[in-house]
Length: 615
Image 1 (tube, one colour):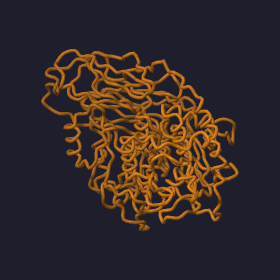
Image 2: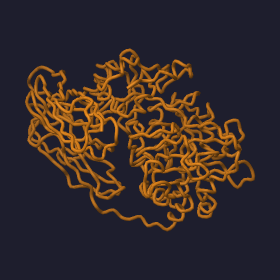
Image 3: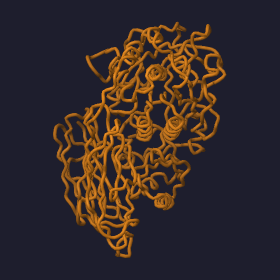
């Protein structure tokens, strides 16, 4: 995989990244290996792997339950300094020395209190070249907005957040409705538009209407919260977008629009979208303007929107793939500019706020609806284009505001009384433990489309901490427990509030629970050798995978990851283990896939190796 350096080398501007300072990328020789995919799982996605990233910043995901002092010590040992903390999504933005980024990331990845590390990628505003036709607002009629407005034109009790390059609040069609927000790119209160893209997006979503001037937005009444997540060149970062989502949710936003791409494989942003979903909000994200197919699957809790033209055909620039949820008009869209006037624009950047605006109208009419219901309404009432049913080109279809509002007026939310199911993957029942251990769980909900909201860790019947995102992993400091037997359990709770039957094991804390009685600390990582499949193998159907894991002291578990996602974990004992897995590749996309085997020892050190295979 080749890391791009174009934006820096072509002088596209000085970036004050989320942490401040410039952001060159690493030389190709430092990043071209499957080892980097094992370290940075997001790089399994080719589009994301080619993005520029800040070489002085790492995104660190902590395990729920990790002791703050342990996390601080881990950062210090690796030579990283926390510059921003997002406790809502168990994330720390850390400053590192540019020359040491990979070494620091590798050391942090082996820390027992940390779940993962990620690069701080950069993303571009999705503005396509201007359409030469300064057309009227026919696209708004295509989706039935005049009929939808007969039901609702919006409500000032619904807060919509525009995460973009800022918003010009003085525009005649935005004045009085745009709230001063936040600048999460350089951590200031300046949410003014420094590039022009954000004001265009805000106008599409919510320009004042029926006022005898200018243009009509989708939503006439809702308050617009301006959140700047980009620099003056129109470039945003993973950390700034995620921070902006969390900030907007904490201030009560129900609808959040993010018109940057490609975000369908960015773990940090998708984690923030899951947090928003669990908090009662929906995040809409532009599908992208490169016109290419992506194998990434996106997220159940984020709505990715492609663009159609005035003939209801897919716009030539609109990206496609299984991550696309909906489409909306995105060609020759008339909107507000940061100079105070109006112009026509094209891009998935403007399809996304149209879909987001319809969601705001739905919530204005029915504020009690859950995010899952609003998303289903948009999907189920969309005009089916292309192949029958959901497809990778149009998703569920082109959004239909009139049908969505009509359905919202009459819908009765189905009550979900079925509890999710949960299993405890680690530790093993009867295990002797000491120090900080890792607790892992798997959970699923039986109601399609609702999903697991969180998994709660219990110790001796008392809740300790929860995790809202798969894979469900916790850090448990057994040194805080008395020696002897303890019950460790997990409970899954779905979006409707149903709780699963607990899954429990008994563990035995040795001695005083601190760190055993060896008098030494094991810091050596396990080593892994994948015996088959071999790198470059062509695979199909059931793929047999076998690996040998070894450790200087003792192994605890061995995990199978495919394209950075944990598929299975097996317990292991002793200093050497031969472990076999079966991956059902029938449902996988055609192309390259990364198979990673990761071993964890009893001191929570982790070692991994990967091979790339082709289906």
